Length: 105
Image 1 (cartoon, one colour):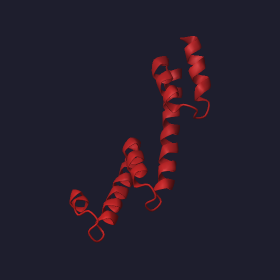
Image 2 (image 1 turned 90 degrees about the vertical axis):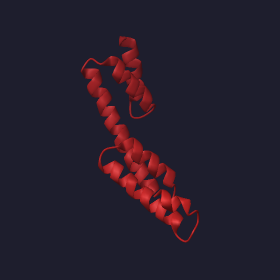
Image 3 (image 1 turned 60 degrees about the vertical axis):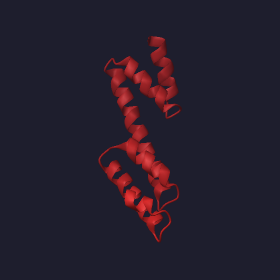
C-alpha cells in the first residue's frame, strides 16, 4: 500500500489507497479490532460506505464496552467499571452508573 501512496495522484493511486484502507478496516472489524476499524473508517471519510460502517462499528464497540462495564460492576471490579462508564460519556445510562459507583466508592 505504501507503493500506491508514494505515487501521489498518479492515475488511480488515491483510489487504490482508499480501497486498501477500506479492506483493512473491514478486516479489522471482522476480527473484533474495533479501535483499528474505527480509525481507518474515520480516515476514509466519504469513501464508499465508510461513514455508515464507522457508525455501525462505533455503536457495536460502545455496546460491547458498556456490557463489559456492567460485567465488571457486578463482578466487584468497581474501578474498572467506573473507568469504562466514564469513557462512554453519555452513552445509554453511563452517567447514572458513574454517579452510582462514585457514591459506593
